[in-house]
Length: 222
Image (cartoon, rainbow, N blue to C red; front, side, top):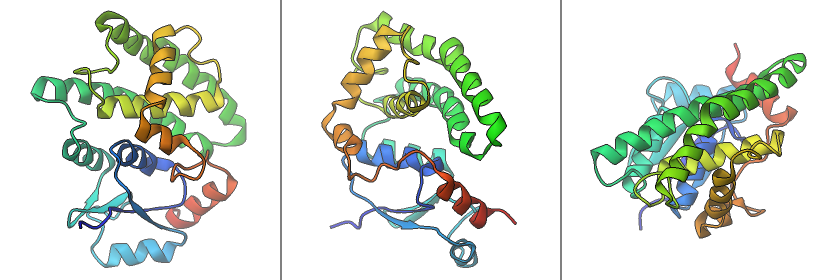
């Protein structure tokens, strides 16, 4: 039996949360080794386990993968979540890249100064409503299918759902003007593997709190 993937990252969402989402959606069990100190990170760096001296790092199939997008592409391709041909892969990749631009704002939000956090929530809402969500609403309306690409679950669906749910934690009515996305979110959330990941007790991480932010600063800041 192949070993479970092992994820190396602090005990929180950050850039590793999307990796957790994709593994869970694929039905892949995984282990985690949480970074809690600067010394743990230094040990990985000194042991040549981090190609560019950075995490996320995922041990999988005998490899130590770094760079979030490369990790996501590998897992998606391995578990048939990356389309059936070059055109579908390219479309999935475009949707993913756009969604990750929005998700990055959410990832960085807890590290802003308190006075800037509420301003950034307004900025995130505006970008989601004006730039990003209309794209996906149009796609779903025009092709009338359950998924974004090829009428099967893909990396694009998983990351879009993750981003929508993370935004809804901050702005509960963010989808009020997007009926197709509302329906889509419900359907995606009820896919058995995703539904399991969304239930209490899973390896899905809670919204970042002060402890997580402090831990990240202690590990990564000089």
